[in-house]
Every structure is written in C-alpha cells, then in structure tokens.
Image (cartoon, rainbow, N blue to C red; front, side, top):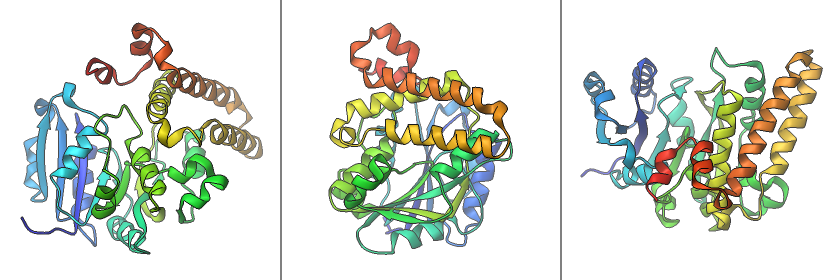
Length: 307
C-alpha cells in the first residue's frame, strides 16, 4: 500500500444529486485527494455510477451498524494518508482551494492536530440560520490551545466533521474517534487533542457550502443528542458547559434582528432557542428518563437499540 498525502472520508446515507456535485468538486481541487473513501449506509441507495470517479472507494454497511464515531473510526483505519479530511455528503466545496487551504492550516506548526473549514450558507438558507453560520464560522482564521479555555470555553474544542482535516499522527496519538458516539465525535476528538497539548485550527479560507433550515422539532432532537454526547463524555465537557455560548448566540441574534429590521423573526428565534435548550437540557439528563421518552427525543434511535 502506497503512502498517500490526503484521503477524503465521507459517510453517506441515501446520497442524491448533491453528492454527484461533491465528487466533481473534489476531483477538480487544485490539491486533489488521493482517494475518496465512502462509508455508505444501505447498499440499495448507492448509485454505481459514482464509482466511475476513479478516486472513489466505497464500503457498504447496514443502518443498524452505523455510528457517528465508530463508522468514521473504521474509515480512518482503512486510510494510510498523512492527512484525513472528513466531510458530510451535503457539504460542497466553495472553490478549488478547499483541500489546499486545509493543508496550509494544518502545516502552520507541528502542534496543530486538526483544522476545520468555514461553513457558508446555501442559497435557500433562512435569515436566522445565515446569522448563526456567521456567528459560528467568522471571516477570520484562528488557532486555539488549552490556554484558551478560560477565554473561549467550549469553543476551544470546536471542530466540525462537516469538513475537517486531521493529521494522522495526531489523530492516532489521542486514540482517534470514540467507537461509540451518538453525536459530536469531532469535538470529542478535538477536546482530547487540546487536552494532550495539540492545537485546533479554524481555516476561514477553506470554505464549504453547508446549512440546514431545521424546524423547532428538528432542533429539539438534534440538541437532545448533543446533550447526550456531552453527558456521556464528561471528561471533555464537564468544565466547559455549552449554556453560556448558547445564550450569547441568542443575545447576538436578537440584537442582529433588531439592527436589521427583522423584528418579526424574534418569535421564531425565541421558539427555536427554547426548543434547542429543552432538547439539550433533557439530553444532559437522559439517564433519568424512561426509555420511551429517550427514543421519542433522539434523532438516532439505532444508537439506543445497539445498547
């Protein structure tokens, strides 16, 4: 097996036309990957025409076997590349420089273990979500270390596998992704890196289009699983709770709506924020809830059926 420089790893489930565009844009990168490893859930949903892309190597699994951490961990074990770029099937490179700019961010110094991309709103993105994108993914790059925890709190560990690059050596040094994770496998790995002395880089010039217009119910389910992940990994999150950062986002969003004259969206902001907090609050306390309630709250029922 030859040594590769970059492997792109993408878990998929019922991929569609957008995935075709993703493969095309990855092939056209100025610094193209050596291989695109696809971990596809449900072989019946796979279009064999995607294998016409010579970079693609697909591995099929059943839905019951998918895990946010374990599936990506298995993919990493299939890679021998110096750098592994993890993406989701609905993230589209904004230009031909995505991978090159991620590599540039990783190579700033030897202590940087991972670098994540800026997420830009898609054309159909709602007004509130557009502001959330800019809040979480600002215009300027940064590098965070353990010494930044007092200032940035949980943001110190922020990393998103929507599009993130990991140095193989650093990834392996911290044990990689956890084998079982309902959500948040990226921040758990990044938190372990920071605690071991590595830095996490945010590469604002590495850009992907990625956004969702979640309903309040979807926000509730998503944040329930977020709360569960933090409760299950208190070794990472116990000293950096999310509530403060969430409240800051709400206050900034409210001020932005007033400033831009979109005051009619304030009720929507309140409802969404309430749904997010309710989901997160219950998720952090999932162990006190009956199984039926947990299954009603989660967006990943297979996670609980695996025990």
